[in-house]
Length: 165
Image (cartoon, rainbow, N blue to C red):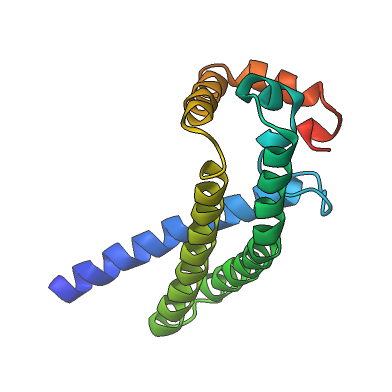
């Protein structure tokens, strides 16, 4: 009986997971393709952040260098994650056996974990380039952006390439 409940829970979870994957894949497919532009917000490139944080030209260059060093790994990881999520969706759609689906889920989550670790290390390395005062100001700017996302989007839209040079 417990095994039957466990399978039912697993099946329900896989259905929810596949629905989420399909929604994520569709959302990415509908987003405008801009392969030359990295995903995310390159805040150190914007005049507003440079001015408000008092970033030196050297700091901007070093922040950009840290980003550029991580970018190839982030892009490869994102591409790999997209491919493996599509494969997982395909397996679920064709009613593959549970062991095969579980192996694919493990692969997807391993890639996602590596991608998140890479991103977190990028953020850590960039943060280490800022003074304690700049870190406080950066947090305040991001808090402000979260409080008023519409204004933040207008500010980014006012810059060429969404604030990316």
